[in-house]
Length: 281
Image (cartoon, rainbow, N blue to C red):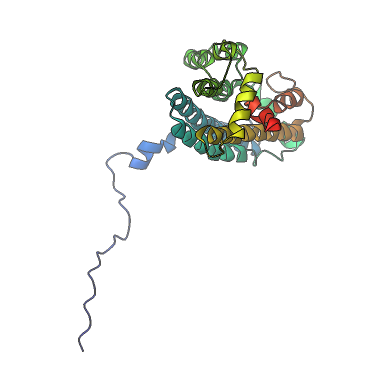
């Protein structure tokens, strides 16, 4: 009996392609050599490296999240709710990764933090321009927060542009109005460079949305925004707890009130009417 012919199998190379004329395509795309040589510690303490790298990772996540929220805002301006929801859902997964960045820092003792805290000088996380853009997109506008960036023209210009553009939530409220909800002109045409204040009319609009079809696009948009708001709250609280563990009630490195300032921030609700409307459904 003859053996059945086996199908021809192409021989696999023993090693991947290793010979490139210049840098690797991976390096050209990721710029890993740049990223992994941006760490310049200022103390001899070995724990400073994880603090520095974790902070840099946070900055990268801020950048991605700003991209997602700007994508969502642009989609809402064009009445493209599915694209906005998709961007918001991506951002929640990214925010979960961002929030997990507190893990390496969340149990620092005062002694561990003090071993390199002096290297930070007046540096503080609230000086992060990309985090400030996140806050502006949430409606937490403040012209005074541009002041620390006057010495960096490009950064200052980007923040000034973001200050004077409608926030993500401004675009949401305008969409509610276009969908027939009675939002007052004072809300629709407010000075978008100012912090957003809760509106009874917007609360009533969300109450109507949540009292209707739960599968409607506005209801799904509301839930996507609520997921974002919850993760922002968790970020702020994780920041508060990590700071309280590392430095107690000492003033912050950037001159803020430290824990007291973070406690005030943690009490604020993002997209406030989405939370208060639930009491009326």
